[in-house]
Amino acid sequence: MEHVFPDLSSHIIYKDAATPNTLQRWTLNYKGAAYGWAWTPSQFATPSFTNNSSIENLYVTGHWTTLAHGVAGVAYLGRDAAKEVLTRAIGYAAILTN
Ligand SMILES: Cc1cc2nc3c(=O)[nH]c(=O)nc-3n(C[C@H](O)[C@H](O)[C@H](O)COP(=O)(O)OP(=O)(O)OC[C@H]3O[C@@H](n4cnc5c(N)ncnc54)[C@H](O)[C@@H]3O)c2cc1C
View 1 (cartoon, rainbow, N blue to C red):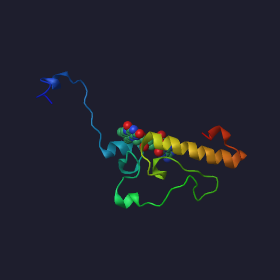
View 2 (view 1 turned 30 degrees about the vertical axis):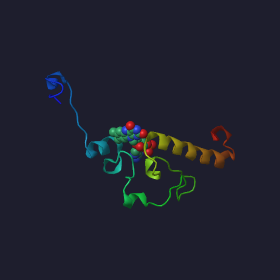
View 3 (view 1 turned 90 degrees about the vertical axis):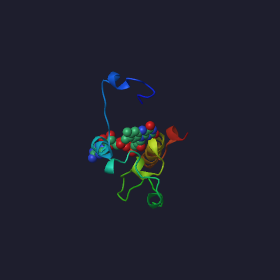
View 4 (view 1 turned 135 degrees about the horizontal axis):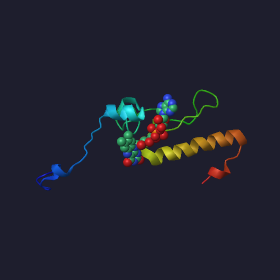
């Protein structure tokens, strides 16, 4: 970098680094997996997911319940889970139909 920006290091006042261990410590995700399941052949073959767990009235969501990565994917899943809860609770989820 200093080849391009001479004397860069003398202007750095804070340096940090993160490993998967850091991510696991901060996010509690298994082995620090930032996005949940990896897009590898062995994990990609995981059976399809659902918001319903095997326990009645327990719904699951988040990046371990999908192969969709990132914030947008989990936001959508959270909406789906909320819709299922509302539909079951009051039989109506018009507020979340769009
Ligand atoms: C460094 C980093 C950078 C990223 N950058 C991007 C990016 O640029 N764009 C993008 O789309 N995605 C990014 N991601 C991925 C994205 O942040 C995750 O996919 C997403 O936040 C997962 O949402 P989630 O609701 O499944 O889990 P989380 O957001 O991890 O939420 C789970 C919550 O449950 C809590 N929790 C865990 N265990 C327990 C327990 N036993 N009791 C109570 N609470 C508990 C945790 O503290 C946490 O608040 C990044 C991830 C990391 C780590």
